[in-house]
Length: 323
Image (cartoon, rainbow, N blue to C red; front, side, top):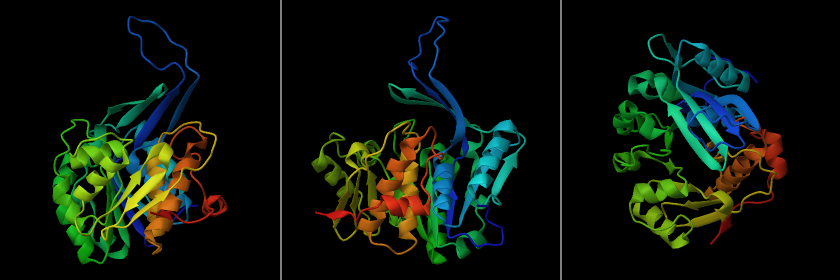
């Protein structure tokens, strides 16, 4: 499905796009020129923002991506994958002076990510036209900590979006510096925050273990801004939502044959936001999110197994569970 530039996007996604080289098998490095043979190597579309945009488009939500790529082979690959997925690429810029970022994913004994940032950190508020915010229903920003220039301008950008009647969401992703600065300044403008358990605890700074429901509850409540719904990617435990009016909903993980978990959290985001822009309840948005995240793990990379609208409908058996 290819979207025409004249079709107004319902969701504008802003952030990172790059190739992922996903390596599977015996991926724990042994230095000293020891050659290791792998089970698989796949070059796929990566970047949290790009995967979210593709997931939304796959679900039939008209979606535009604002990102920066190099004028190189990797940039051409990324733009081609986005176009093939049905994402509106009108606001994808190409830079001749900086190469496209790239991530190597070591998958087999857990997951490790090695990223060369390249163009990933070049986005600014000025790259997001006001006309785009005015026509969209929702704007989503991904990989906050990889984009320091944009991060500093995010409160103003989200305030502008709200002024145009557009809601906003944020997935910070991991902070490579592990400082976790600046997000509390943005939260008053964030309608939906989409962390995983480790990110939620780090952002809140309240301590506790990732598998401790009480610690996660404390962290979520401490980040409450009066506006923000927190939709947690809880891995094997599915997902949890805390609303500003102190409701809590859960949804269990879906049983699938897992091939690769790369990008599952981004597909979770796409599922949640697809329901959000349709006005579904938080519980129903969460059920969509967990189903999309689960189904995306059926193939290598973040986008190959993202569900269609029909596949999602077939998978869903009910809404989230209220506690």
